[in-house]
Length: 122
Image 1 (tube, rainbow, N blue to C red):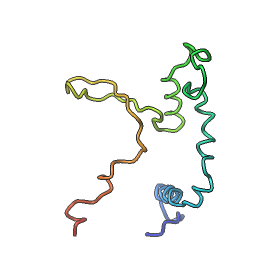
Image 2: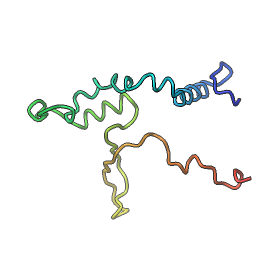
Image 3: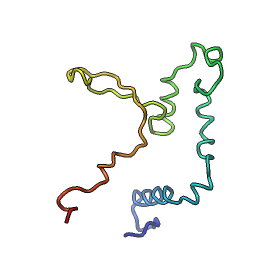
Image 4: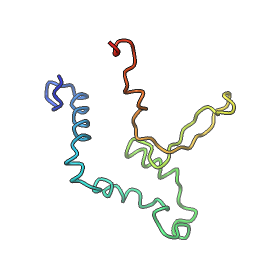
Protein backbone atom coordinates (compact mmCIF):
# COMPACT_ATOMS: atom_id res chain seq x y z
CA UNK A 1 0.00 0.00 0.00
CA UNK A 2 1.21 3.55 -0.77
CA UNK A 3 -0.67 4.83 2.30
CA UNK A 4 1.83 5.91 4.95
CA UNK A 5 -0.57 5.60 7.87
CA UNK A 6 0.17 2.46 9.90
CA UNK A 7 -2.74 0.02 9.83
CA UNK A 8 -3.61 -3.30 11.45
CA UNK A 9 -3.23 -4.95 8.03
CA UNK A 10 0.47 -4.05 8.01
CA UNK A 11 3.06 -6.31 9.59
CA UNK A 12 4.61 -5.03 12.80
CA UNK A 13 7.80 -4.08 10.93
CA UNK A 14 5.86 -2.10 8.30
CA UNK A 15 3.85 -0.31 11.00
CA UNK A 16 7.09 0.69 12.75
CA UNK A 17 8.68 1.82 9.48
CA UNK A 18 5.65 3.96 8.64
CA UNK A 19 5.60 5.49 12.12
CA UNK A 20 9.32 6.28 11.94
CA UNK A 21 8.98 7.80 8.47
CA UNK A 22 6.01 9.93 9.55
CA UNK A 23 7.84 11.13 12.65
CA UNK A 24 10.79 12.25 10.51
CA UNK A 25 8.81 14.23 7.93
CA UNK A 26 6.37 16.01 10.24
CA UNK A 27 8.31 19.27 10.48
CA UNK A 28 5.54 21.00 12.41
CA UNK A 29 5.88 18.57 15.31
CA UNK A 30 9.67 18.49 15.03
CA UNK A 31 9.84 22.29 15.22
CA UNK A 32 7.32 22.45 18.08
CA UNK A 33 9.51 20.12 20.17
CA UNK A 34 12.58 22.28 19.62
CA UNK A 35 15.52 21.06 21.66
CA UNK A 36 13.45 19.16 24.24
CA UNK A 37 14.34 15.64 23.00
CA UNK A 38 18.04 16.46 23.36
CA UNK A 39 17.52 18.22 26.69
CA UNK A 40 15.78 15.08 28.04
CA UNK A 41 18.89 12.95 27.42
CA UNK A 42 21.36 15.46 28.86
CA UNK A 43 21.17 13.88 32.34
CA UNK A 44 22.56 10.71 30.72
CA UNK A 45 25.69 12.58 29.68
CA UNK A 46 26.24 14.62 32.83
CA UNK A 47 29.24 12.44 33.54
CA UNK A 48 30.90 13.48 30.30
CA UNK A 49 33.81 15.59 31.63
CA UNK A 50 33.90 17.84 28.58
CA UNK A 51 30.65 19.31 29.90
CA UNK A 52 32.13 20.28 33.28
CA UNK A 53 34.62 22.73 34.69
CA UNK A 54 37.84 21.31 36.16
CA UNK A 55 36.90 17.73 35.39
CA UNK A 56 40.20 16.31 36.57
CA UNK A 57 39.62 17.54 40.13
CA UNK A 58 36.02 16.30 40.12
CA UNK A 59 36.52 12.95 38.38
CA UNK A 60 40.23 12.25 38.61
CA UNK A 61 41.20 8.66 37.96
CA UNK A 62 37.68 7.30 38.56
CA UNK A 63 36.13 8.39 35.25
CA UNK A 64 36.33 5.91 32.37
CA UNK A 65 35.30 6.86 28.83
CA UNK A 66 34.83 3.21 27.86
CA UNK A 67 32.28 2.71 30.65
CA UNK A 68 30.21 5.71 29.54
CA UNK A 69 30.41 4.75 25.86
CA UNK A 70 29.26 1.21 26.75
CA UNK A 71 26.33 2.63 28.73
CA UNK A 72 25.28 4.78 25.77
CA UNK A 73 25.56 1.80 23.40
CA UNK A 74 23.48 -0.32 25.76
CA UNK A 75 20.78 2.30 26.31
CA UNK A 76 20.47 3.74 22.79
CA UNK A 77 21.65 0.77 20.71
CA UNK A 78 24.02 3.00 18.80
CA UNK A 79 27.53 4.30 19.17
CA UNK A 80 27.35 7.97 20.03
CA UNK A 81 30.09 10.47 20.82
CA UNK A 82 32.75 8.13 19.40
CA UNK A 83 32.68 5.12 17.11
CA UNK A 84 35.05 2.32 18.09
CA UNK A 85 35.56 -0.79 15.98
CA UNK A 86 38.14 -3.36 14.95
CA UNK A 87 39.12 -3.25 11.29
CA UNK A 88 41.92 -3.91 8.88
CA UNK A 89 44.98 -1.71 9.11
CA UNK A 90 45.22 0.48 5.98
CA UNK A 91 49.01 0.11 5.99
CA UNK A 92 49.06 -3.68 6.43
CA UNK A 93 45.97 -5.67 5.44
CA UNK A 94 47.24 -8.67 7.43
CA UNK A 95 46.81 -6.74 10.69
CA UNK A 96 43.65 -5.76 12.53
CA UNK A 97 43.62 -2.60 14.64
CA UNK A 98 41.21 -0.62 16.77
CA UNK A 99 39.72 2.32 14.87
CA UNK A 100 38.35 5.45 16.55
CA UNK A 101 36.09 7.63 14.45
CA UNK A 102 33.19 10.03 14.64
CA UNK A 103 29.84 8.24 14.70
CA UNK A 104 27.59 8.37 11.67
CA UNK A 105 23.94 9.31 11.55
CA UNK A 106 22.94 5.71 11.12
CA UNK A 107 22.12 6.04 7.46
CA UNK A 108 24.03 4.43 4.60
CA UNK A 109 25.69 6.61 2.00
CA UNK A 110 23.62 8.38 -0.62
CA UNK A 111 24.62 5.72 -3.17
CA UNK A 112 22.60 3.16 -1.20
CA UNK A 113 19.38 5.08 -1.93
CA UNK A 114 20.03 5.90 -5.57
CA UNK A 115 18.82 3.28 -7.99
CA UNK A 116 21.35 2.82 -10.75
CA UNK A 117 20.76 -0.75 -11.88
CA UNK A 118 19.44 -1.63 -15.34
CA UNK A 119 15.90 -2.28 -14.10
CA UNK A 120 15.53 1.12 -12.43
CA UNK A 121 16.83 2.88 -15.54
CA UNK A 122 13.83 1.60 -17.56
